[in-house]
Length: 85
View (cartoon, rainbow, N blue to C red):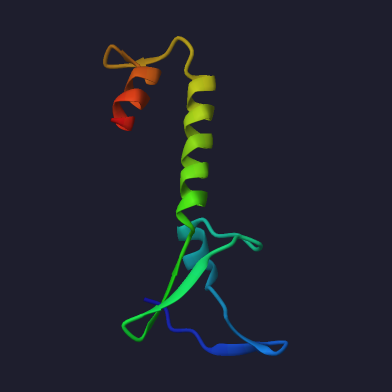
């Protein structure tokens, strides 16, 4: 857990994300996140659509580079299709 201080950014309040936490989460400047209040706590998370888009792009990259490769006799495409079930 990290402790941060709420600051001011123009007329808004701002919370800085420590660099170690940002690297762990894969966050970069300009990324969009969702913020909500849940049981009196602030909850910040990535939109599900972005996570899915990232996963689809990763799967496409894997397929592009997977020609001729297999894992335990199963093709990478078969493994990806199995994961979709």
